[in-house]
Image (cartoon, rainbow, N blue to C red; front, side, top):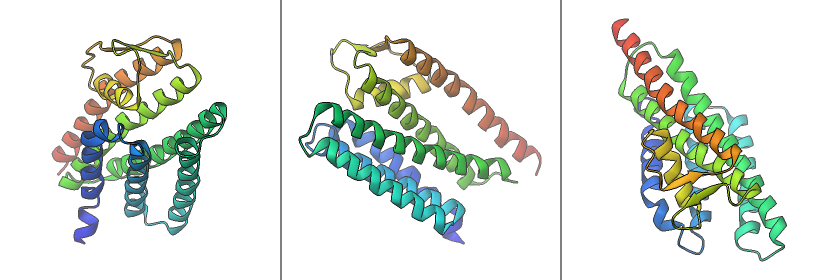
Length: 214
């Protein structure tokens, strides 16, 4: 019962930890691979804790292993640059599928919840963090096709910069240190900004309605 009531503890802790240490890990030789490994593992565990489906668990593990192999080929094994880009693209798309499945599973539980609990609140916070990682991965895909999709004073925009841009856009802070320049990047940034405004409003309204309905 305790594990069921606190199923978001591990995911929330891992998401916060990854967000904090990510800027430091990307500078390590295999930092991006480590982040991908632990992030995907956290999402797989979270999805299994929510729906308890062994079939979904096997499918997620299979996708994870495929994405991990693709990421290894893209970061460790020196091959053709074009092929490396396709390996990165494939693994990033699988990451987006992981995140989307996790967000869907959590939101489904939040919608069906009948009362406000600490676990429901933690689940909503997890969705917010996952949205930030989701858009960062989407920006990575855009940058694979158009390397100059983002402009920065640092001239080069890496994955840590995209994560920073994603969360500042999601929080509608908009420091202006990183600017989307391509049309696709601008559209995605606008959509993320709207998501950052609408999601907290809808989530808080849901919590209020649950509290008033008690």
